[in-house]
Image 1 (cartoon, helix red, strand yellow):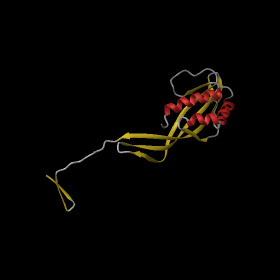
Image 2 (cartoon, rainbow, N blue to C red):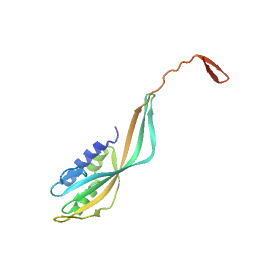
Image 3 (cartoon, rainbow, N blue to C red):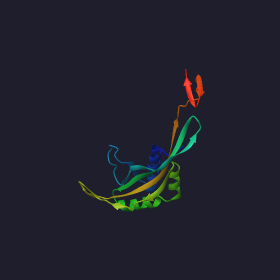
Image 4 (tube, rainbow, N blue to C red):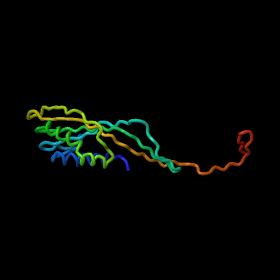
Length: 165
């Protein structure tokens, strides 16, 4: 087992929905905006750290592990966005939250400061507050490699040279 972005996204939505008791969605979904306060999530980047490490080579293939950092942006939108973002940020260290993300091979590495970024809408200002969480993740990649089991050649070896007829 290793990190899967799909499993991470599902866990992030479920976990943050429990923390906030409000709608949590991934941004840029071509869907209507939720009514009332909500939280959006967006994976901003995925950065490789260090070199891949081969952990298995049994003749049939190889499996390598890779440590990476993934940045998840969390944005509270609507009434009292700063207060709600602060509550989410603080909850990221709770044991059940840590365990939920560890279950999908992701661990909180760093949390940024919260930025207050209100936006003008047609009916006035909308509260928005945003912060980033950098997760440490470990991925495994497996590959079955073709290999040559036996080579048979007819010829002679002399002076370290193979002569094939």
